[in-house]
Image (cartoon, rainbow, N blue to C red):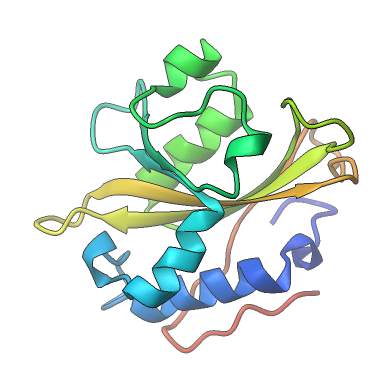
Length: 178
């Protein structure tokens, strides 16, 4: 965990999403999208962005954007790639978060400065949940639950964003805030 980061930044709703994802894990590996309960996942996907990360790590393709997010995002639409939208990769904290989730296969939480069309929104809180491909243990998709805030990003001593891999120990672990 990075200095100064508090898991209290994770809302109750994000905590429930993390708990649901964690409960789907079998044998310590990430679940597949096929394991999502349609009733729970319909509410979850309203506030999430889905990205295909199965290809080389040079780029990721967004394939779904929840309806609740559409007014807050500029050009993130299904079928658009990260490079097409942002034009940057390795230097972007957002790209680094996707790359880390793909590489490690573990959830990730981050707070970012907001750069979008809605006045008054200053930051986002994003929970990146990895899903493996059904036929392999490779991470193929990342579902990112996004919340918007009028508060600025809490700064840490390392720079522009707070990032932390979430503690995943067992299927019964409950996310606790500090």
